Structure formats: C-alpha cells, structure tokens
Length: 257
Length: 72
Image 1 (tube, chains in turn yellow, blue):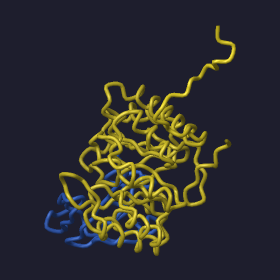
Image 2 (cartoon, chains in turn purple, orange):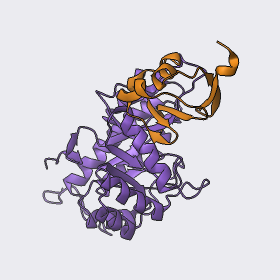
Image 3 (cartoon, rainbow over the protein chains, first blue to last red):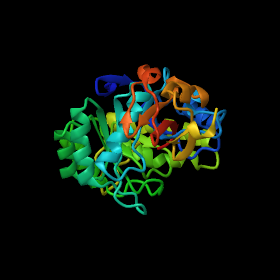
C-alpha cells in the first residue's frame, strides 16, 4: 500500500520522526543525531542570550534552519500569556509560524495544563500561528483542540522524559479514529519498539528527545528510532492479521508422508 | 564621559550603564549579537529589528534578547 505524504499545515515533510534538540552533550552531537535520524523537523526552545559570553556557540550555527524546519516550543510556560509571549519572540527571530505549544501544569509530572493549552491554541490560531499541540491523551480534549484550530494533535505516551512508552493505547486509538489531523506521539518514548507501537496504532509521527539524547549511544539510537518509525508505519499500512487464539499451520498437510 | 551622565538599563536581567544617546542598535552592536538569530523585547514589547536604530534607550528600560537553544 502506498503511503500518503506526511503533511502538517499544508507542508510536506519527508520524515515522520521529529527530534528534540535538548539534553545533548554538544551541538555537534545533536547535529549528528539529526542527520542520522533523517528528521526534517526539530523542536527548539526560546531563551535569553548569554550577554556575558558573546562568543558562545549557537544552535543555529550547527543546525541550518534553511535545511531543517525549526519548531519553536513553549517549554517552561505555565500560562497562555507566557506561551504567547514566547512564540511571538520565536516568530520574530525568523518568521516561524509552525509552532509546538506546550503549557505545563505541574513541575513534577510535566503534564499539560489543558485549560490553558486550549485557551492558548485559540489565541495563537487567531494570530496566524499554526499550532501543533502537546496534550494529554483525552479524546474529548483532543476534539476541542481540533475545533480551536490546532494543526496537529500531539498526545503524550507517558510523562515527558520518563521513557515509559505508551501507557494508554486505547485512548490513542480512539483519538486516531476521531481525527484526520496529524496525530503525533509527543513525550514518553523510551526505546525503538515504543516508536513502532505508536506508528502501528496509526499515528502519523513520533516526537522524541530524551530517549535519543540520553541513550548511551545517541547516534545509534537515532538510527534505531528512524527505522522503528518506518517499520511501524509500514506495519500499520500493510494491515495486520486478525489475532487468533489458536494456531494455524504455515505448512500444508497435503502430501504428508 | 562623566559617569553621572550614564543611565541604567536592564538587559536579560543584568544591569548595564549606557550613555544617554545609546540606541537599541548601539546596544546590539556593543553586545555583538547577530541580528538574524535573535529577537528583542523592550519593556515587554517586541521590537521590529528593522527599527532598532530609531529607538533611543531610556533610564530603567528593560530589554530581553532571546535566541533558540536546544529543547524538546
């Protein structure tokens, strides 16, 4: 079965794997990971420039925003106002309209504050942003985000950076059934098989940071994740067999001696 | 320049002293910031980077200069 193109807000992307750029040992390691992963979208954060160290290396010196789509995030924002301020600044740096909204409600579990997330989605959409929304795996909230103008629904698999894998497959499947928007698992992936499962559930993509950045060999893990996403997608498209309680011999008994 | 003539501003949370004729552009040049990789806020208002030479800084101005860093 031929795959549809991976499209977000009318833009076509090659890779269904989106990679985060945080937690790497160096910018050069991060750049190698991105190359190996095949990702053409990477998340980035907006922070103060260090004014006392003018010669410090910058992310943009290592990852060319003309070749790789920067997806500015709102990491560390707890209110709609914080998130909007951050994304307006991101837009000012270089005209980015495609953004990742992430409004948190709790510093420990890093769960999304969905009331503020919904409010931010509405406000940002009105301002012309194309908002990809980090959210919980609640199908009702996912529907509300869609109605508010989100361009992608990005539910967590498990808490950010936890590496626990997909905890609630049923909810992800329900969200998949109800939306035609790109559905991207954001947060909670621990190993390659988690990414494959996400794709086999019918997700359009996976966003991974910690599972790659904090692996013993991040570059090899980037390749594993790339293959896992491709594998899961192909498996989904191929149409799995119906699970059966009993065995079904692969070899015919015809001609048996 | 007499130190008394200098005015205090805050840049990224740090106090700085500048001469009264300083524009936002003079500040960015002094800090050697690459304009195409940053965004600037003056007293919580985003500034159009094309206009920075026209903005003269005042006492107590709060400036934020941000860029992209790694994030998930």
